[in-house]
Length: 293
Image 1 (cartoon, rainbow, N blue to C red):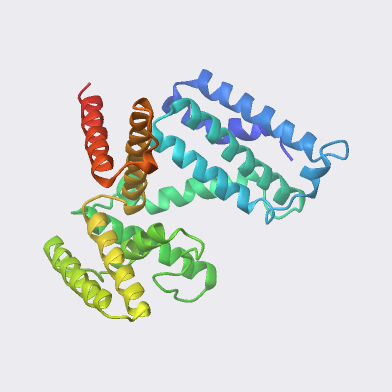
Image 2 (image 1 turned 180 degrees about the horizontal axis):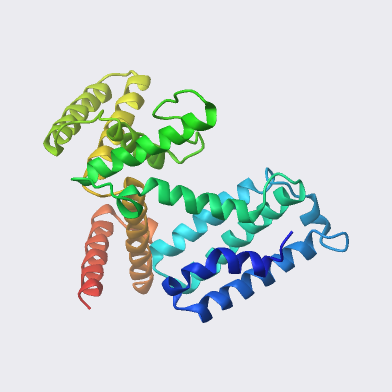
């Protein structure tokens, strides 16, 4: 097996001009090689007993957790935290690769080469003469290429939703479902059609709330959220990110209210609703002042 430094030189060096020149690539190769050396040491007979007990399956939850932490850092706009969390995710990916390599199932070089070829294949408008008249045509081609890849793997036609991970968070899963359905030409013709559907779902939700049918209430609530995800997707908005921003905005405002109440020697929970609403409006004004700075 080639040394890790040689492997990365072979795979990354051709792209040096895109990453700040050869010096930057050499530095990255050196650090990646050093990190892989750490992993090899951890997995050696003289290494860490806990690490040696791990398997790709046992590391799945850590990958999910660290990926969520990385996404949170990105959304907060904290570059130092982003760099730290990227390191954690990269470590886990290299760790898992090393475990598969130990079993002789695949090597990191194959992973990187497979990813390179896949991206070239899925971007024919960049790497070949293909052209698309709209973003929708481009996305439809992307989904068609993915389906053809899956069909090649299984030697038979596969469905539009083949490979959709069951474990995706619900909002992200809804987004991916709408995206794939649209790629197959199954979606509303216009944004206004989706807006009308949202209005229809809202009325159905109100009817369900007027009844005592809890199953219908849950179903209609899910339907309107599902439709809103599609409306956002068509506008270039990911519902998961939008909801996360709203949740963080609420937490910032609530924290402001608690601090403001504390400055007056009061506990927020003991305030009347009128006082709480006044603090909420104050928090919103303070937020707008901050945005204007």
